[in-house]
Image 1 (cartoon, chains in turn blue, brown):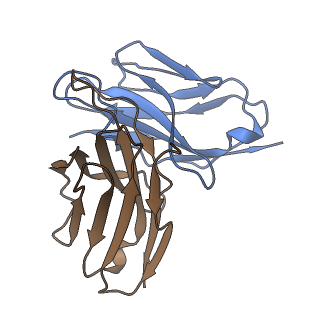
Image 2 (tube, chains in turn brown, purple):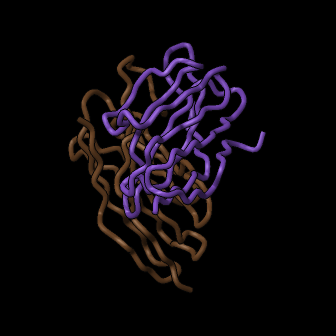
Length: 117
Length: 117
């Protein structure tokens, strides 16, 4: 079956520090990979995605590259801000039809990020 | 359209009681998903609908759980004879399934937090 493993948190950084949150996966078929973010009091939001090997997803200064050889999709940001404090979830989905499926998702356990001024 | 809405936001119930949650998806979305999230964990897939048809159910969805989407619009999730282990956040998401069976991004509601005492 499908599974996602994220680095354990919480992660605490100072503003402008470099961020890496590790994510590895196991999946059958050809998964699409996602990072979701959950800000305090809000619902899950899609942060970025990659649908095939070597794709790089990026949004709001965050990046992640789909590495099939290492089954990884690590999230990075060069300079974090206080407003980036949130819970980050790595996730994947597979589609039996072969098309990109954003629906049925398998999530990691989440990583709490706190950024201090 | 203001996104996916869930009602109620919070529910406290006594063990053994029945509870029902409602989800209103984004109006043009034909797919609707239910997830459960316990403290410190990522969301876990429960079930999903394509229009009014329930196409997949997780093994997590015991006989005490039932979900419906009678007219292909809103959905309800009922838990009968609640147990303390049912305490969790119940999340709803919706997406649009395209002709090639791929999906648009899944949008999540803010969830219903259930506490069974």
